Amino acid sequence: MTLKKTPDSKTNGNSKKAVIVGCGNYGKNLAIKLAESGKQVVIIDKNRVALESLSELSVHSDLIVGFLGDATLSDDLKEIEILDTDLFIATTNSDSINALAVQKAKLLFGVDNVICLISDVSKQKLYERLGVKIVNYSEIIIESLIHSSLEN
Amino acid sequence: MNIVIFGATTLGRSIAEWLLNDWHEVSIIDNDALRLKGTEDQFGSIIIEGDATHQATLSLAGTSRADVFIAASDSESENMTSCQMAKELFNVKRTMCVVYSDENISLFQLLNIDSVINATAASLRFIKENLSADLIISLMDIPSSTPANLISIRIHQDSETIGKTLSDLNFPNGFSIKMIIRSGTVIENSVDKTMLRANDQVVAITDSINLDELKELFQ
Image (cartoon, rainbow over all chains, first blue to last red; front, side, top):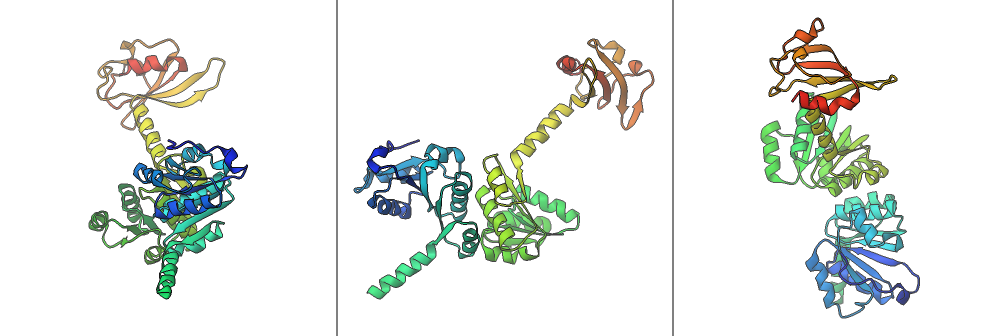
């Protein structure tokens, strides 16, 4: 179910869009960053309330679209036109859901760049070997904590 | 063999029970304390509490020594992740993953998971077989100019045919009784005059067109 109409592709040249799985703080802020560089972004989430928070976005609301659905289901991925995607980032708080979604996007739908957020370091090697880029959530938080403590 | 099971679900526990009865070495991983308690009461100390998608938990369960890893939790994504880890990080030869729909079967096969088992389809098949076993099973197609079928009819305990002989019944054309199997013994002589009992198995040849009619007759 599309919450907002997909922006006209003409506004964005002919470049492909990005898909972000999970409309939490991380997913939303990532979407804003991508939209700042002119990228069209679809955020998919199973939770309607999380998606409704998108309507409060003050910036780039024209480029960011919410979609109510399950990113681990092929039907829902087809509905967000996964074949027209060149960047797929899974940011839910479940490592396994993220891993399932990105591997599906990569292996079944051939998305070039897939990025998987994980909190458990022991999976890093495994998924990197399978050609999935891994972002380690806890590492990022620790790095930014160190960074901010140095600043103070 | 040494087998690690992920998921102290009803399914996981049944698999464990079956393997333990066969003298295999089994560990079962789950993160739900209540489910683990039940499992421990049933089988003793084969349980590992923790997240089966974490290397430390898999390590604790002895996955590096396992011949087989079976993921039978309720979560397809966690089943996938644990199987991938068992295979890639612990070099388990045979990984088996339970799924509940057709959605992920092809992907999981691509991911080198050795067996992907659709639990829903398997139980549906079992139910169908059992439903039809109460009445008529087709044993064999007999190729000939007019196609025929070797069938077996089990007499249900509520069947109206009980106490009747086969010659009392009004069989459709193209139906011929060959034998009755009653508690393991075969009755071949004067089949027509044998009185039917519950659980008798009637073996007959028929043209397949009459199957529906037969079902009604033996109800």
